[in-house]
Structure formats: C-alpha cells, structure tokens
Image (cartoon, rainbow, N blue to C red; front, side):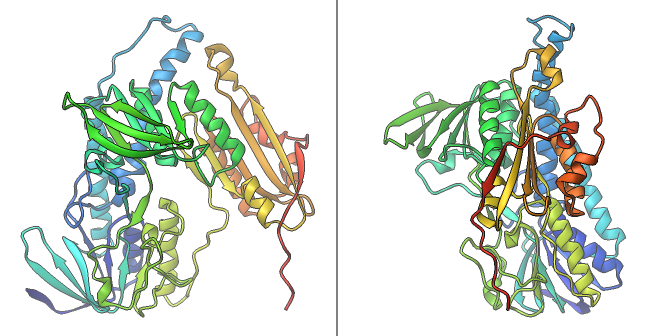
Length: 489
C-alpha cells in the first residue's frame, strides 16, 4: 500500500455520476483541491469492478435509453406516414438492432470521455478504481490490478448512485435488468418485463417498437404508481394500443429455463391466486433501484442509513458524520439526473461558506413511454390529501391532429390542478406527443407562482397541442380536500 504523501484534499468524491461530477468540478473551480474516484468504464455495471465517468444516466440510463426510444419510435412513424400518402400499408422497413446498439455505444463512450475531460480541465485529480472509506478523513482506492492508494481528505462526498434491484425469487439469475437490455445484440421474439414503473413502460415501448411481443407483469391495477391517476389510465390504454400485453395485479413467482434451453418460463400469479407460465426469450426485471452503498466502508464512520439503505443526510446534504456528505440517488430523495445536478450546485455554495439547501419544489419529470407522460407539481390525489379547502380540476382529452390522418387511435390528455381559493396552479400533467418539451415551459411558469388567470390570459400557439394548456376554461370538477391547516405558534 502506498499513501499520497503530503497531499491533503479538501474533498474526495466517490462516484463520477451526474451529482458527483457536478459537485467535484464546481468545487475544484472554486479553488479547493478535489479528487474523484470512479470504477473503470463499462456498458454493464458490475459491483466493485465496472462503472465509469458519467454514471448511470450517461452510460446505462437516461442517454442510451432515450436514443433507443428514438430508434423504436420509427416503427410507428412509418405506419403513420402511410396515412399521409407515403409508401403503402404493406411497407415494412428492415431494422438492424446491431447497428443502433453500435452507434448508441459509441455515443455513450464519447460522453464518458467528455466527463473525464471535464473533471481534468476543472483541476480535479481522477483515480480509477474502487473507493472505500477507511475513516472520515481517508479513502482507499483499489485498482483493477489489486494495488491500493490512500487519499487523505478533509471531506468525503459519496455520490455512488443506485443499482437495479431484482427481488430474491427462484431463477433470478436468469433475468436481466435495464443494464443488459441496453446492450442486447438481437431483438427478443417475446419479452417479459416485470414491474410497473417508468423503466418498465419505457423499455416495453422500446422493444415493442423493435418488433418484440412484449408482456408487462405489474402488481398494481395501473402502471406508474405515484403519477396522476387519470394519466396512468391513459398510459395503460396507449400501451395496449401499441400491442403491449398487460398483466395487471399480477406478481412473479419464479423463472426457469425451459426444455429447449433457449427459452424462459416466467410463472406469475394473479390477485385471485391463479397461476400462468409466460414463455419468453428474455425476462427483464424493472422492480426499482437501491442505493449503491455496499463495500463503501460506511461502517468505518458514524453514517446512518435509512430503511432501504439510503444514506441519511441533513438539509445541507451532510451525514451525521461530520465531513461526510452525500448526494444523488444514493440518498434516495428524488431519483432524477437534474436533481443530482442541483444538489451538486447546492454543495458548491455550502463549501464556499454559503450553506444552501437543495430546492425540491416544482421539479418536472417525464416518462418516455410512447407517447410520453410529463408532469410537474401535485397530482390530483396528492392535492386532495394536502390542500386545505378545495381544488379545481381542469381536464382536456383529445385526439392529436396528426392522428386524424394517420389513423392512430391513441389519445392525449392535459390536466391542471388549481387551488380554488388562490387560483394558483398546483399541478400540470400531460400524456401525449412532445409532452416533456411542453412541460419544461409549464414548470417555469409554475416555479414563478403562475395562477390559472395567468394561463388563461396567455395567447396560445395555434395549431398545437400546447395551446390546450391556455384554453382550458371549462371546470371539470371541484373537489373538497383533506388537508389540515397548521396551528399558528
């Protein structure tokens, strides 16, 4: 073991994902001495062995997923084009998954290099290997060849993100996660996806678009728990219209390899106790992610963990161990890349002597199912539980103009949640084409405290779907809420 003699860092960051890189390079630019520790690069993560600068989002998350969403969307585009006079109803362009995977991987590799250069150019020292905390002021780096180095530091930032989770059931070793599904070299003829969250519905759309017969096994009556109920219903309807087979209120029991050796049998059980075996080529579990805390040496500190293994931090992202900080998915507040970036910027201010809490209000998000869902603020269900008084709910459902000629039956939905007493817009939700692009602008208005009157006074862009947000005049329903006013002290 060698030790970095005479070198004391102001901060050692373990993890070079979105949050870790943003915090490290901004703090380094502010004049502090910073080191970053990250595992060697690879497309499929492997505990203590494979990671890479850029983290989950760049390498095996948001970026490659969105590229595959684009690729899979062309199947529907080709069919829609027939309604506009292009080609014929029998047109069936060929698809080469190997080509798109190769180009996707090349782009991810390019971005990985950019993240490394960003750290270098900001003045950070970069150590490739597995980082482990030996004490609140020392971090050991273990390289691939087994050699080690100890870094001495005043502060440690844990930004190791999360890992895909597969529940402990018979045959789990036969199943894939989103990591593997991002590098398949051929399109599965039939694919079973277990889970009802955003990863499940996104990958269902991707592989259905590539030509797979896709089955989703979801334990709830509707996918996308936590999103607005009306939106969830429409997403379910649109998934089925894209040919995806939904098995709702159904749980996986086991997975086994069938007699031919190449197929899998996924045994599932419905809410009434009936069982069924779904035969498939690939079974992917999208049953959530867990904070990546194993092997970090947290036992050598006083850092406390929550029930799901998330690192507990105070409002300024410091753990109960002074000098040890954490941000991003490893603290399991809101698992979104822009949130990790925002937390990194909050840490910058704190390290500059201006303690700042991350602002988690008014964060927009999107699910890149096809067509996508986008949202900001309260769902109707959340508003009913939290608001004191009443809310006004405005809902507009329609068939997008493009679909009138293409013949596609999918519908769009837009929804506003408004506090009756003040007219303040509390939530905005949309299912339909371009909803993420539209919702980003809505989020700015809501962050500024826009009221329904402001929306109503805004002139729309015609013809567009977005204009529906400023032309919704007819109240759909007024709902009495369950919120309780806080007593004045």
